[in-house]
Amino acid sequence: MTFALPPILPLLDALALVWFFVCWVGYTYYADRRRWGTRELASALHEYRLRWMRRLLERDNRIADVAALSSMLGSDNLFATATLFILAGLVTILGAVDQVQTVASGISFIAASSRETWEIKLLVLVGIFVYAFFKFAWSLRQFNFAQVLVASAPMPAEQDAPDRADFAPRAAMLVTRAVSSFNRGLRAYFFGLAALSWFIQPWALALASVWVVLVLYRRDCRSVTLATLADPVTEKGEHRDA
Image 1 (cartoon, rainbow, N blue to C red):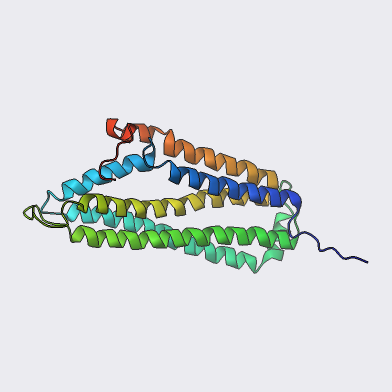
Image 2: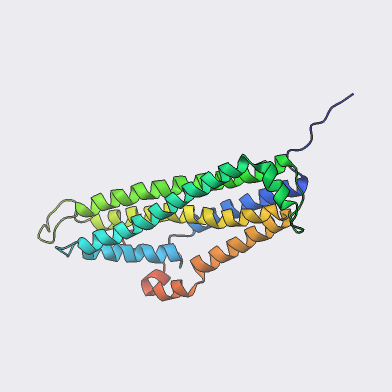
């Protein structure tokens, strides 16, 4: 007599989950690979950060620059805190799966699933928001580093300072990397919302994953905001000092 263990996930759920991660990882790879030298939102904003840091070197008063970095840091901190609350809620739900299943069973369009499948779905959500928290936390640290770098910037009178020549590209790149980490955390929120559709049907997760990719692509590469920010330098893909 042979014994076969039942699959942890039904086939359709497993395929939908694989497709979900293909969409997420695939878009992240695509966005990071095409960022430099293309007409893309992150690339255009990096050019503006270069201009910002060059002009910062010409100012004696840098209160506005520190305030701008503090505003970015505050937004990052808000999302990091919100992520912890979301994780606390998901962990609480994990301890009450039976009650949640009972409530969901009364909703007609939600597919019936085993307790194990529900737990896996919740664990996937937990993993998504743990990833988001790590990205937001690393972004916070990088913004703090950027504040230190800006505070140490040479003054306008220090034309011969050894760090003056490469200050603007280094400072702009540090802020860009902080924003990139923040964007990855924010992207995890988009895909986390898509993952919620998994509780409805596996095909809903597959469709939601594609929809999120299309939304992100349009905002990053085809939005009116990008057209507003873009200039001849950015459109040609020329990134001085980058």
